[in-house]
Picture 1 (cartoon, rainbow, N blue to C red):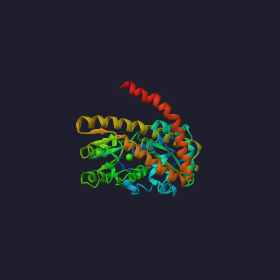
Picture 2 (cartoon, rainbow, N blue to C red):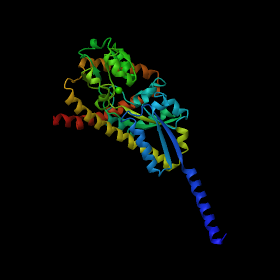
Picture 3 (spheres, rainbow, N blue to C red):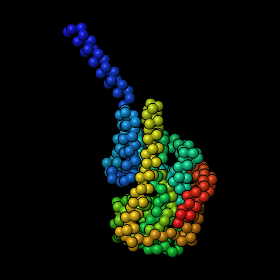
Picture 4 (cartoon, helix red, strand yellow):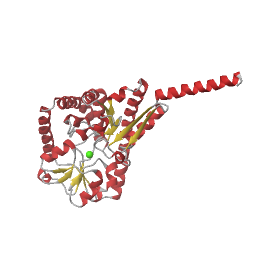
Length: 354
Ligand code: CA
């Protein structure tokens, strides 16, 4: 072999070795499990956008495979699967595991709690993130806001609710802490999974149900069965959550950690925008095609009873859970200072614009 040819072969070998070595050192492939099925928009879009963004921002060094619940079959097992390290990440909602610890509830939303801008203010500027990490650290997890639904509607009812009496014996799908509040007022609460909701509402298994809002409700056709659409009180700012296994996060180099955290924040905000647009469009369509839909607000007596039941329940739960108390007190203090601004800015503006 000629000298020049040999040098060339050696150079190719060396450069290949260096390239492979660099790739091995910098390649990270993670899996992210979702509570959502592969078609549930916009929730499923959020981790998919995260995956694409992380891939592009890291120039292909960091891949995240999104595994929807119709594949892994454990929609409510995200917490355990990320904790055990079976999946490095998850996308779900904190209140789905409130049976493990009811301090998880207010990290999603609380009845009569903060609106989405107020809650984002609390998370990012008002100490909310630190409290969330304090709670999740106990379980070897990190958690980050994963997208907000905005104010959720109070639900679809077959009959009007004129008094607290009308709630007694009412069969309603309403999950989480709000379901406990409703139950205190005599509602027979069930928590059926979304695919079973329309049939249950039409065959009388349910008299009422809540899901999210027009953009996500429209596909189920609830408006064709139960025409009274009540305004919300129970989920004023439902924030989804990204979960990250803490030990796996520690294995990432500094730049990929930053890319991941930034992409989570960006995609969470992106979902808030996407769902707002979906709701507005869907409502316009519903309004036009189904003029029989009646928008209602619960009477003051019902709202007062709900507020009172919520307070009583929460006082009891906080007495047994110091972490829940710490989170609720922080949220209440933040809401007290921010609500004044919400009222004199957006609220007065909207009243003036009517
Ligand atoms: Ca809901």
